[in-house]
Length: 384
Image (cartoon, one colour):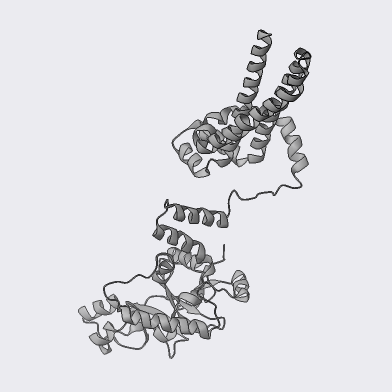
């Protein structure tokens, strides 16, 4: 009888231990962040390389662990039931009413619940330690795994992303509430995700506020007071604002003054000015600013008329908030902001993140940035 009790205790213990091991490994691999796996991989950890492969083929990994876990649970339970039926025939009450609920309770508590909590708490260490073993077991059970993959391929989403924008935003929100992410970091991350919903039309400086001069204006005609009222980049035009011909930097005007070349016209010292359509997104604008190494684009409407100008600073302000330098008049900025809101209201825009569906579709077909001096397409800015 003593030997029987010892065998029973050892059998139940092994059943619970192995059940707990596979439950812990399953949760650890499922919950370990890809960022931590990548960090370990960058450090040269071979287990992280294997773990990354397991994460990339997660359905096969889960299938491997489920097979192992069920083999232990079903096989171990069957073995203990067999022992109880064979050796406890003289104790029917213990055999029928004590052994089964005891084994079930031990498996649920110490084989499932507790190890899964441990697996989630120490997911990185456990996942790395078990990666090679699970990889080998996956190869061993490759045939049944492929059979299961065939049976489930009709309900599985192919090429499903590992995460989504909504999931990332939810994590950022949770990080902000828990204090893991500072408020300003939280705001910046959220604003970055909004860039694709903001158009050049909603953040541009309207044509009525542009610094613009006729291209025939001579350097000597500009007084210090006039220059002080202009922006550092001045749009020049031929006849009217719908015929933009270039852009002049204030520093080039000052250099011309210093070199005694006051008789030069603005057209002679101008640089090419590029244009974008109103429906180009802020995210796309940022890419174009980097690609062209420009800081200002002229915004045109669908008819080719000038709507305003958009700068790199306008896009950056959508991410980090208002940017003021030592020359900015804060009262003037407030006035312009009010005028901007009024213009948006007149344009029937809900807000700066509103995008007209028809305009968005048009931009998919044709969104170009042009050199207005040469009247040719400079870059094909197809939306990615």
